[in-house]
Amino acid sequence: MFRLSALPASFGDCLWIEYGDGDHPNVILVDAGPSLPKALIAKLKALASRGGHLELVVVTHVDKDHIGGMLTLLEKDFYGVKVRDFWFNGFRHLSELEAFGEKQGERLTALLLTKGVAWNAVVENAGLLVTPETCPTFVLPGGAKITLLSPDRPQLERLKTSWIKVCGEADLYADVAAVTEYFGMEGMDAFGAAGALDVPTLAAQKFEEDYAEANGSSIAFIVEYDGRRLLLGADAYPSRLTKSLSQVWGDPPYRFDLVKVPHHGSESNLSKEFVEAIDCERYLFSSNGAYFKHPSQPAVARVVHYGKEPELIFNYRTSFSEIWDNAALKSLYKYTTVYGDEDGASVDI
Ligand SMILES: [Zn+2]
Image 1 (spheres, rainbow, N blue to C red):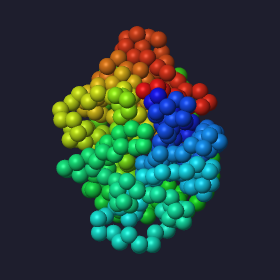
Image 2 (cartoon, protein in one colour; image 1 turned 30 degrees about the vertical axis):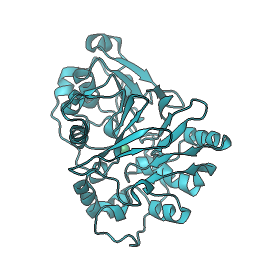
Image 3 (cartoon, protein in one colour; image 1 turned 135 degrees about the vertical axis):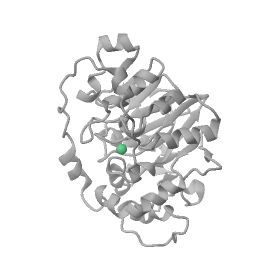
Image 4 (cartoon, rainbow, N blue to C red; image 1 turned 180 degrees about the vertical axis):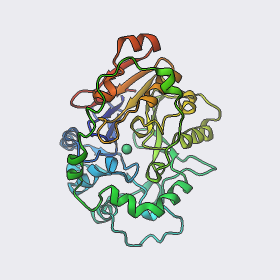
């Protein structure tokens, strides 16, 4: 089996990936939403009860919609589930010159150290990043192959100067659950049921790439298993992803069986060039639209317009995703839609 579940994690990501034997699959966890999703707790308890472990846990970057729930998870010792390796680029990884032991106030680092969790063990606690020479690959127990696509050294260096600010915004010092409660449902009904969307015009809207340092620092990667390919875009920049893909495979197109689009379907992270470089029929959008109103119309329009008769998978049915569930639009632009339920969206890859 090879399956991705986008759990309901409000406006954030919480991705549960299983591969291997269907009865006892290997598991990778990527991010844990702004606060710990109930569906994740249930999965971890089930995993603990069958004596399973997590092959890999990844915090893609420090924004609160990815890291918040992970802080609680570390405090709860993963509900008894052992973690083989934990990938996270901490402050110490942002610069090659940073001394390992420099004291940092942010909570994830403190938790990783006090809990004794294996941290970036695969690279002996160095940073996880791509270089102009290589996009590193790693093979996990059970045979899943990971190829790193983001971040690069300049992106980590850029984050360094704003680390304190970003960690403050990520509420690393405060109660993340309170932040989620505050922002949780904002904007959910800002858009009513839209009429027919003008897809070509939306798709052609001027693209201005994301420049947020934390997003640029995202750990994005490919997971390959049993001849199938999954792209996990985190909140990375599309230009970094296509640049890395060209390093790995040369000229486009790049074949995938499923793409978790970068940055929840923000119009600044889905470019025409990115969609045209990808050969894939299924795109996953993970957000309930709260706070940032994701996925944005131009971003989805680009997937529809420049993609290949795609299936759009949304882990939430909201006013931002539901507008694409329109028979006339689907017939005109040749795409289909799938919506998650209270457990999110699960896709066999
Ligand atoms: Zn995000």
